[in-house]
Each structure stands twice: as structure tokens, then as C-alpha cells.
Image (cartoon, rainbow, N blue to C red; front, side, top):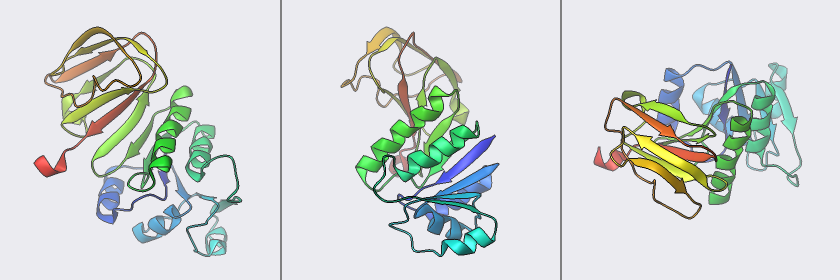
Length: 216
């Protein structure tokens, strides 16, 4: 199962429309202002969540169409996006989040951390915008160069030291390196072989696949 979350960061309608053409979802959650974005994209969500401090759409119109609406007070423990991610995890669903970048940095960083909620449960969760795909890896994995989002790929420790990293098939290889918080050692690498592998013994990695649009 795969869920799309449309949240309330920067909205690039052209990119979002292209992305939706290429991907299919079993369930769609609109988060606060993301409901306005969904409307502009012609998308009817299955679920709407948020405190709606930045969206003035008449929610009763969506309830009449059978959309589930969960409205929260602004003074709450979790961000609206975290609520949506937890809803998707409760469905045992992989997650893509769009419109989650380009706004407030505190919300962006929180959303990156929300990806870990899914990863902890063995689910894939990605934060996607026009130039990047971000996800959290909890174990070793492989990549195909032709399927990567862009030319550049970076690895950043999520919550502590990532032990014994080995990078094979990359321009800059490693063979048993401990990547510590605060280090930029693994930023801006490139895959040079058709397949690349990322091995590590323990820890969690933020992975960023990036397209340098200006130079492409």
C-alpha cells in the first residue's frame, strides 16, 4: 500500500502535477493548507487533517463527499504532518510527502524526522520536491544509478554515529568509516557504476538524492 501526503510547504503546481502523473497511490491525506493544493491539482483526498490555521476551505463540502476530516486545536503536541505520517503508518503504508519543503525550516527538519517514524516500522517514506528526494535508511541498501532522482547523493547521520560505512560503486568510496554527527564527509557523492551499495553495521542515515537543476 502507498499513501500520498500533501502538506503545507511550498507548492510548485507544475512539479506536483507531473509527479502525480508518474505515481499512483492507494490513499491520499491532505494536511491543512495542503487541502488547497489538492484542490488546485484536482485531487480528492481520503483524509484531511490539521488545525487549519492556514486554510479557510469549507470542510463540510469534503465531509459531504465522504472525506474523513480530523480537525485539531492549534495547541497540540504533534505537527499536522506528523499526525498524517502516523495515520499512514497505522495503515501499514509506504509514504510519499510532497509540498513539505521550501517553507519554515523548523517544519522541514521536523518532517525529515517524521520519515523515521515510518522507517522504524519497516516502511518506506520519502520527502519529495522538484530538486530532492529525502529518506531515512535504517539498514544497508543498494541503488541503481539510472533510477536515482539526480546526479548527487548524500548521507548524513540521523541520530548518532553510523558505524562501519562502506560505499561501493561511488565516485568517493569508503571502506569501514564511522560517520559521526557534525560531519559532512558523505555529502555530495555520485554513483559511477550501474549499481552502488551502502553498507553499515548500525545507525540510521538520512539519504538525499539531489538534482542540481541549474547545472543540468
